[in-house]
Amino acid sequence: MSWKNETSVTEFWLLGFQNFHNLKIPLFIIFLAIYVSILTGNLLIIALVLVSRNLNTPMYFFLSNLSSSDIILTTVVFPTMLLVLLKNGESITFSGCITQLYLFGSSAITECFLLTVMSYDRYLAICNPLRYLLIMNQKLQVLLVAWSWVFAFLLTMITVSQMCQLQFCGPNVIDHFFCDPTPLLELSCSDTSVIQLENLILGLPVTLFPLGFITVTYAYILITILKITSSSGRKKAFSTCSSHLTVVCIYYGTLIMLYVIPSKGLSVNLTKVQSLLYTVVTPLFNPIIYSLRNHEIQIGIKRIIYRT
Image (cartoon, rainbow, N blue to C red; front, side, top):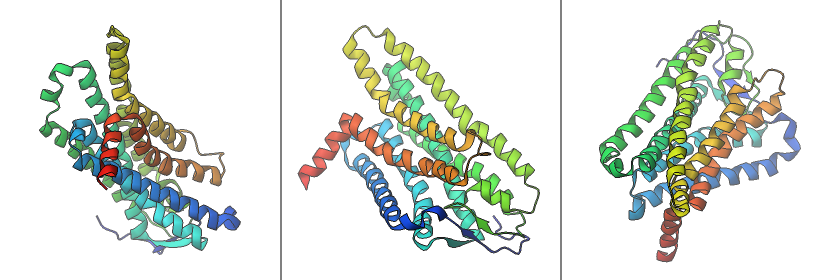
């Protein structure tokens, strides 16, 4: 990818939260605590999956990759946001802005694909339990995860490579706390209609298709659970997918708020709040939800505590 573009703008200025100058220290402490909590929770999930034998299953292998994606997504945004907040704005180079945009988009798309893979895993476990381990073998697990990461990074590369060719010859102030694509495109003096159309077309396989697939798999899962005669059997079957279903609802709920609900007519501050929710809610609550709802993870945490 070439970083060169025909532009006089070599860096951008991130405004951050200009209306909260008097609260910058409390907000800095709160956001720093959230970031540390996100890192701690997701690193704990990864560590548990690596060291605990009872978590050596496909579902937790996918979960550890989901945690890795959450760590990348927040680490790309939070350090910049904290610096912008503390200094009442901060500059970022053009290459730094593009890199941030690329890593943020790639990790977000990876999360969509991983959630889809996890729904397929739950479908096999509940609807086809006798052949589950035969189908969801180690080779298939690695392939599904590898393609989720590779496909996400390739899709994001298409858009980012086009943005590298844009001209920026006017204002360089981004009224946001990180390099979000929408305000960045608004600063370009080039025709961005092709990129916007491209984003819309690429958004279908990234959001709607995975969501449709997840909806269909859970429809089959629900039908299968309702056919189970014993109430204890139904409860046990539902508990194996309730955590994933909760995470899917939170993730796509915040995603729809950010990218589907029209931003026109909304204040800049409200748009920032939407972006903040997307970068905070899912990465923060993923480990919490799985820790509270999954007995195996609770056992793994207790074993680590007792060993220390």
